[in-house]
Each structure stands twice: as C-alpha cells, then as structure tokens.
Image 1 (cartoon, rainbow over the protein chains, first blue to last red):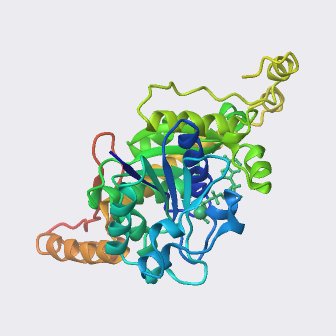
Image 2 (tube, each protein chain N blue to C red):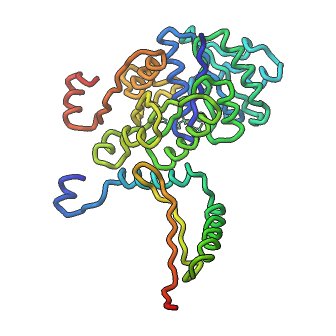
Image 3 (cartoon, rainbow over the protein chains, first blue to last red):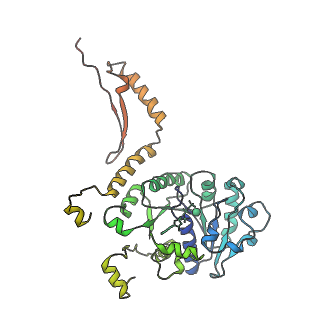
Length: 265
Length: 86
Ligand SMILES: Nc1ncnc2c1ncn2[C@@H]1O[C@H](COP(=O)(O)OP(=O)(O)OP(=O)(O)O)[C@@H](O)[C@H]1O
Ligand SMILES: [Mg+2]
C-alpha cells in the first residue's frame, strides 16, 4: 500500500526541499520504491538538490496537461535503482495545476511506488493546496524560531481542516550549543506549543551545504550528522521504533577528544 | 550564560524563554482568529451595552484584550466607570 507524504512548512527556506531529498534517498536506501515530486511549480529546486538537473526532459505540468506519460517524466536516479524524481515546471506558474490534477497524479503514482514524497512550496496559497491535495499524510518542517513555529501552527490548522489527519513534525537546523546555553528553543518547547508528534530533529550542519554543492544528499555521507538524523526519520516513517538521538555539539572539548579518538558517533 | 557573564553580573533572560513567551502570546491571537477589526467592533458593542447600565468614564479608555491562561485563554475587558454620588 503506497503512502503519499507531503512535506510542507508555511515559512519559506526552513528545509522542505532538503528534507524531501534526504528522506526520499534514505527510504530508497532502505529498500523502498520511492518517487519524490517537486510541487514548487515555477521555482524548481528538488532536481538541483538531488543532482539530477541535467536529466530533465518532461515535468509535472507536461504530465498533467497530457504532453507525455508519467513514466516519461519520471527521472531515475542512477545511484539508487528504486528512486525517481518528478520535476516541477520551471517556466510555468502554480495555476497551471489544480488540486484535482494532483489527486489524479497521486492516484497514478500510488500504483508504482511504496512512498511518494511531495515537496510543497512555502505559503498557504494555491501551491500549498495543490501539494497537500493528494496526500495521505503531512510532515511539517520548522526551525526553532518564532516566525517559523508561528507559521507551522497555521499549517497544522489547515492540514487538520483539510482532513489530512494530525501532521508530524520535523525540527530542522537545531544548534545544540545554542540550546544548551538557553538561546534556542528546545524540542520540548516546540512540541508543547504545536502539540503534534515529533518524528525527528535535524542539526544545523555544514554537510548539508557541502553535499548539496556536489549534487549529493547528506544521507549519502557517512560522516554527516544531519544525514544520520534524516536516515533515522526515514526509518521512523517506515514504522521502525528508532529512539530520538540526543544531539550533541561537536564543538565541545570532550566531543573533540572523542572525535580525535574516533569515538564520535 | 557563561561563567564570565555571571562574574561580570551580566544577567539577561535567556533568549529562548523570551521567544517561547512571545510565540505563545502571538498564537493566542492567531488561534482565536479575531482580527483587529473584529476586536474593535466587539469593543464598540461592549461599550454600547455597558453604557446602558452605568456611566462609562471615557469610551476610548476601555480596553478589550486577549490573554493566555493556563487551561484556557481569556478575553478581558477593562471598563473604567465614573465615580459619582447621586
Ligand atoms: N539542517 C541544515 N543544516 C544546514 N543548512 C540547512 C539545513 N537544512 C536546510 N539548510 C539550508 O537552508 C537553505 C534552505 O533549505 P531548503 O531549500 O531545503 O528550504 P525550503 O523550505 O525548501 O525553501 P523554499 O521555501 O524556498 O522552498 C538551503 O540553503 C539549505 O542548504
Ligand atoms: Mg523548497
């Protein structure tokens, strides 16, 4: 039974595309057959984050408007035989697609895949409504900042009003050093405020930028803390019981010593 | 807060608790879905009702605010009435 999961946030730039690329790849690594769908029409991004930008022929709008078949538009990621990308159109706007189109597309994708992850655009307008239209479940990404959490709260309300169940939460860009000195809200603070289930915490990590620079994703990098966090979230999505790991800042003396001894996990 | 900060007497509330407090306050308004226009209309109606029974000091001095409580949020109206002997 396929699961269609939309990744959304309200506020822009908090990590939806990064999350979609990493979870999609991690699920494929764990043996699932996965399609990641870029629903950010007009601001195509997921292709470059995954390093697949040179292989695009057709896009989501071509499929919806019947210019090609779904199979022709799906780009196979050669590194992971079970991973496919459906890119967004770059030169069209979000009104080229309706929620009904998205439901029809999802019905077709459902037949082929175990997981379909949809990367939503920011905001609460048409693009967001398209992105959640065909979803079975919704994952909300936020950073531990006032504006991002406020927008996430708005999204929780909209998701529930659209009868998509209780969304799950990913807290991104946590800085353990700042949390420790009381200058960043904790997981508990954000969960208490939003009152939804947390399925993962991802540290703010330079490896996100370095892997993205190369057209790779952090879950492909064994040394990436963020990659490990995303991999754990993928396993939780698959129903495995993986405890939340406690994030530690690797800037502390003890950690540096452990690191030097090869003990950093 | 670092040891040095404590030593130098730089006591400032941690910014995360300020963030949480501000967030909770703004969400009270967001969740109740009262726009400033609706708040103002409600305030005017409250003034009209109350002034049927008591002399209100100054209609503009009446404040209606939305406050966060422990178990529920509260609408609070502060209505100064005129002190007078008849
Ligand atoms: N955990 C992280 N650590 C460090 N950098 C991160 C992390 N997550 C995201 N970023 C960076 O933040 C930026 C925004 O991320 P991303 O594009 O995934 O956000 P988005 O929510 O998809 O944005 P948009 O709303 O524009 O679609 C990118 O430059 C990305 O590399
Ligand atoms: Mg994005």
